[in-house]
Image (spheres, rainbow, N blue to C red):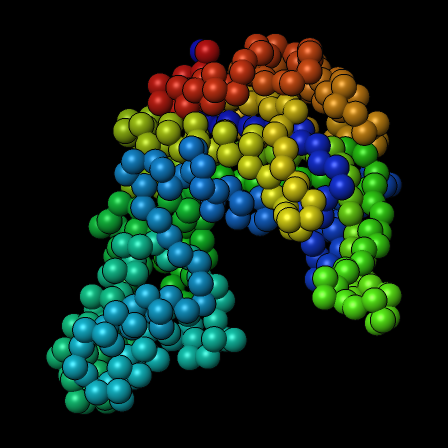
Length: 391
């Protein structure tokens, strides 16, 4: 029996003719590794797609989970718009409260949209702010100066409630929503509201050197007459890539239980772990089956994992990325062989102390890993969290 302090999830995904994640110039993201340039998918891109997926295993389908919003306009559109619609306060009062709340939530530059960072707030936090704003506007419907002072003091630790988000974190379950509990958040205006991520996601990269081409395309004008220029209405190009990607995700189980249940991470084994187990079950499915991707209409970049290996253990995690420091052949069999070989070397050097299960489309030989289908693999990972033991 092994205590599953960490779950390590390794995947191999294959995508042909796609543009999964673009940089600021519209080209595929890249990274150098082992003397070769690889195509890359950023962790932010991966997490975004898992977070917003709307399928059977969406995180929003988990009973007991609350949602969150990431935006620069939460105060304006989710806090003040309802207050404006239901309150008789003067326009000056409403604007004064909105400005004070934007500064309190987003920091000193929060009065302009360009000065705000997109912030993740849970629906309980949004409702908390809405109630406070409504109360201030109701108390000072015609006194903008008093409303501004009260709204400003709300975020002042010495004169008002002070650290509003911290108070919510202490009193409400999932105040920052399930997304905040999983992937963490940083609030520059309120460091006490920061949440450490319980799900650690690496940038995925191709196990082989990049494979790309420039796709030339043209657009035909359906209303073009025979006597008009026979050329295309538009000519363009875009980069397409193909690749077999290694992905790596770590679930910090004590951190996940702490964020979801509000307990100290050191007491995770004594907490209710049904919700954390359900999250792990859903997350396993999402990682295996939800594809990132731009250019959906023109490339249909949808694919399931060719391989998913989950390790449960109590010691510090370690990536298996070095299996591909020397580029592999762009074939799942070759990539799996390298993964297995590298894992065997690590076991020989450090001991094989993790409990392993694997799902694979092709036959594979992963050291000490029992083979399961995805449903059983996800349930095994969830049971390890729920029981506090991996067997």
